Image 1 (cartoon, rainbow over the protein chains, first blue to last red):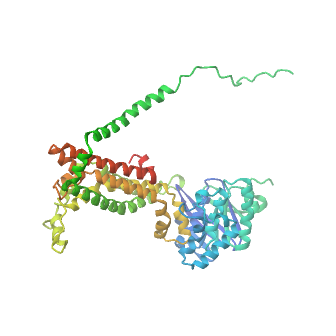
Image 2: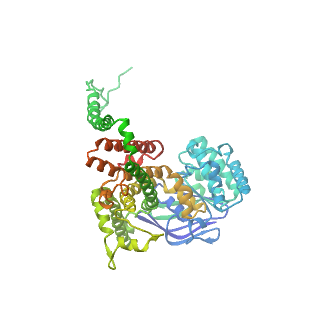
Image 3: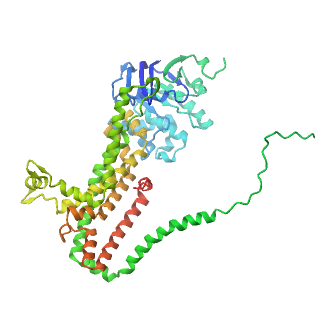
Length: 224
Length: 315
């Protein structure tokens, strides 16, 4: 599970205070909020990329507040995907496994498994420069899932995609959830994404934190 | 069909106006800028027309000039390696560790802001220190190096301490007026250019990929070697070629710190100076053309394979 308890994080000139959030194991959580409210900051704090001022971050029943980034076991897909420009898709999928010193045979097997799950078998030898937006998103997702993390963090994964690719990504994200059982936190400002994917939704109400759980039928922008 | 009354601020048709051609403006820019290009080409052409294959061959047959070519190639290569050795880590640190902006509004933290202001001043100071070799007159760099090695520690100059303590099989380390001084003089200037180039290179690589590598299980060192360095390879090549070219052209600091002794501390710019001072202009021009050729090759390498950003930013 993903649990934030009384978390305070500095985000540029302001501080996000007393953030509480809990996503049960295997659930798909969506964090909504307007641009600039600090959604990405929360995701970065969970990854360990941002220093926390107070509070606790608990991932899969483990308090990781003071742990290093590489020890947290999270899969992270940033908004700009941040693919490695000098590596092929195959190398992206194998990267975390090579770092973990898996055997070559196991790496090859896992790469095939992931490329099958994400429908990118035909792209394995391509480099990021030759991928479309949707393809790059799949590769970033595959790279994040490669080492079988318990937690998946997605920063606006469907922004800047055309309608058809977005529909494909909805199906893909649902199938990833079903087949891997990974606990996911997806941040977005789009109520439709929350409606289509979420098991639980949280809304950041204003600048300075305050994350509230919201029932699926009362999403922001939804007519009551 | 009844005519609708036109609204009070209806768009008016654009009145026909005769516009002057843009050509004279663009042409005058091209002429003014072109004069400088003509000056550069004229200088090179003058050099070429002043010499002949016979002059070139006789210059390169000279033992002193052959020594100067060898020493220049060797010292520039060592300088380039040393410059990269320093510039890659320094450029990376300066690019990645930036001081955050001060806190504002109701959550303002005065202690944190004071610390950040101090760090900002320190970073600015470091930045300025790294510009010193670029803005100082070259002769002053040579003089400063000369004085540095004569500074006394416990009654002995640094030069003497090195001489007494570093020796291999009867050979004693000597810096001033010896080959190490040539490399040190070249390094002092060339490294500053390499640091600037590497910093711009790392600034252009998003820290995001590095952060993702950390989430994938890398240590900072692994993320640096596996993700950042491969993405910075064009910048590294640019830094290497620029510092090599800069080292090749270095003269002022070498003249002061290393002297101009033939077959000892003579590099190509020293040769041009020495040949000119004895009136052998043909040999001076022949060596100059060799340096021009080296500079053109370096520029071609940077344009074809390197990153253009540092050149674009005026380095």
